[in-house]
Picture 1 (cartoon, rainbow, N blue to C red):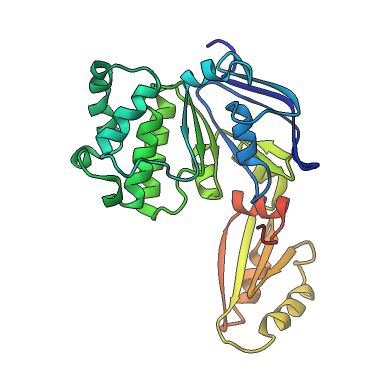
Picture 2 (cartoon, rainbow, N blue to C red):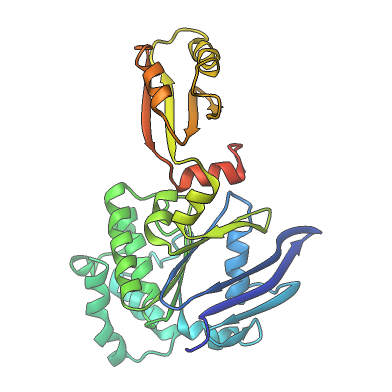
Amino acid sequence: MNAPPLRVRALNKSYAGVAVVEDLSFVLEKGRCFGLLGPNGAGKTTTLKLCLGLSVPDAGEITLAGHRIPEAAQAARAFVGVVPQFDNLDPDFTVRENLRVFGRYFGLSKKEMAARMEALLQFSSLSSKRDTRIDALSGGMKRRLMLARALVNDPDILFLDEPTTGLDPQARHLIWERLKTLQGAGKTLLLTTHFMEEAERLCDWIMVVDGGRKIAEGSPRELIARHIEAQVVEVYDASGTPDALEVFIHTARAQEGMEDMRMEKSGETLFFYTREANALLALLAQWPTLRYTHRAANLEDVFIRLTGRELRD
């Protein structure tokens, strides 16, 4: 494919008069990992469904793998692998049978599927589990099998809807390793995730959406430089003293050299955002009952600033 694997222009979708996707435009470049980030209800999953032709847009244009969507969605999906948000493996089948049955959906013969089977099992580190039924697999094994299943048709493009949700750190890091391997092999990835570390590690380009609209886009490094101060200090009260943080806030605001420091309070944690933290760190050294973490700003800080700290249902 010479054209971009996915091109979306002025996409709109409403349900019951409520806009879920509103005037959304973006392009996936070949061989890159594109992150679609946003809080719950931001329109991420709806956008994926629209791009795959599983839902019909109210307006806009979508071209996937050189095919117009939704008119030629079936032809386009021959070039696409999908890892959905929730596992939908067949519990009556073994690991190998799940892969084999999925291959039939793409018209692969038994001979073709047999030729691909070993590589898929090795890629997902499931060779020893080939004859194991799904209900005997751990959560991490199931997600690895979902990824292997998405590769049955050797797709050019992978849609990954929160691929590591519910996994422990070891399983998550293994999935990240596998996704990097796929990108190195020239695959194009479209990723949604609530793990900002995951997006920062994997994505070349990120678009943040909220309320169905684009609110920011750029590389992870560009977004951090553009939207957040360079350093963050998180302060916690370890003493249990009532109002200890409030007293510290008052003291910090009166401290020379801290006038331009941005501060937020969330629960029992203070967040200080600054370009220079020396004055704050010197003050904290005088408060032994307070614990703190001093770190570089990251993508999660950007996400919180753009979308707020309020819970989304």
